[in-house]
Length: 173
Image (cartoon, rainbow, N blue to C red; front, side, top):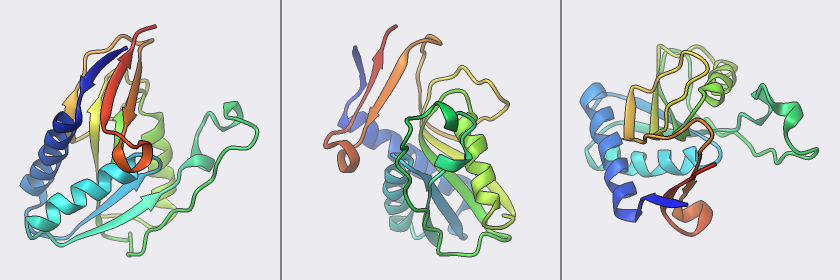
């Protein structure tokens, strides 16, 4: 196991995401939608960065459990959590936010779930960590940190609110 991001590195990556989104959207309206679980915490932190910059920002949360293509491989009683998007998605500029992107399948599921709420004018993707190894053509526009990993490595993201600590570790397999 190798610690690759400590709390200060995570804070820097969150700040970088806020700066990148601000650079693209300016102070105009942006709608962050965090993917449960941990993407929602990353989205909350980016929300605070953007709010302090004076951006008109809204925050929503999306549970994609029932949209996953590996649903049948999950435990017999997967934990379903609620989605909470209290703004109109139609014609909105939406930034999906997740903690780590790997194959791209989670994002595909999130897009399916998001479009059940309406048709956004634009959808971008922000991730705290991009570890590579895509299986489908999905790339984030905003990246906090890029990590070099092997296909079989595991990347564990722990966040304060969810896990009681901030860290990113690579577990070699």
